[in-house]
Image (cartoon, rainbow, N blue to C red; front, side, top):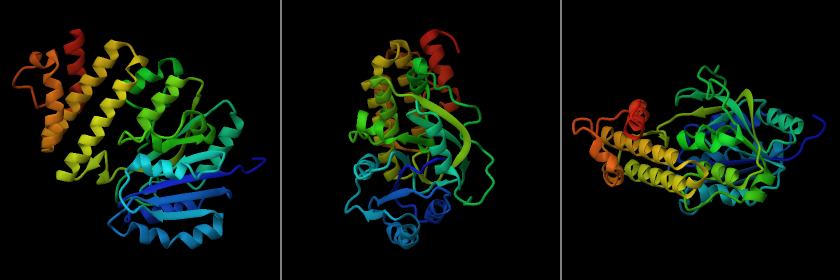
Amino acid sequence: MKEYPLVSLIIPCYNHTAFLDDCMQSILRQDYPRLEIFICDDCSSDGSYERLLGYETALRERFGRVSIRKNESNLGVTKNLNQMLRQAGGEYIKLLASDDFLADNAISSFVAFMQAHEETDVVFSNGYLVSEDQHIGIVGESKIYPTAPDLELATLAERIFRSNELSAPCAFLRKAVFDRFGLYDERYAIEDLEFWLRLLRGGGCRFAFLDQPLLYYRRNANSITSLVVNEKTDSRMLRFYSAELGILEAYRELVPEELYAEAILWRLLAVYSFSVDNRLPKTRAFAEEKLKASPLWGKLKPGVKGKYRFVYVKQIVKKLLYGRG
């Protein structure tokens, strides 16, 4: 590497005190010397902010520019990310959730790849899935990408509609991407899905895959993919799924209408199944209302309704829409 361009490391935090040591230690262990670090706690109630402050001196001594702050009220992930992105001055941007952690060579590997591939705007690395009780220093086993993702631009929108395989935690971007396409859309409770589709709609953005395990992605009880079931969970899942469906509606022109219908239907069936299994009344009512508005709802056998499992949902959709599956 001939030079060390500045990398802006953006870290949103919310109630992750149990995992912050892993995240912060992984930053301090980076073999890349030129980082600016922005950390913002989104009004946690578990002492996360105070734990973060315990790392401020070490981070400043190592990297210089470090900002650790706490929001006065909970803003949500998109607004929290955007306020940090507005301060970023690096040539590259790396977003890191505060319950995840990096391989020691993560930033240097990302930068080296981008310098060697000037045509690339966004690169996705591989990584490992880790549980709540796995910590920094473990030997990873379960890869985020068992096989390389297909990033062919001509059909990428269709694959995102079917199943968003662009893992935001694995992404490393040129800041110029945000300068050109804007920040995350604060109308939605999830940041990445809308952003990837916006890049595809705008055109001219190139994606690449770096098959090195540079990130450890934690599946934990406070993540959207592994939640403790309660009333708060119900409201959170409702916001999440409402946002997802709204995003697909906003970008439906990117895919054939048949594929859009398929994507919406299988998601609704999956949401309905999840809400029934986990006793989430608000989310169930949301999914059921939308499903019943579809003529396909009447084609489902009464004994089958409410008993879907995610693994079978796509088969059900194909049978309903296309007579196969």
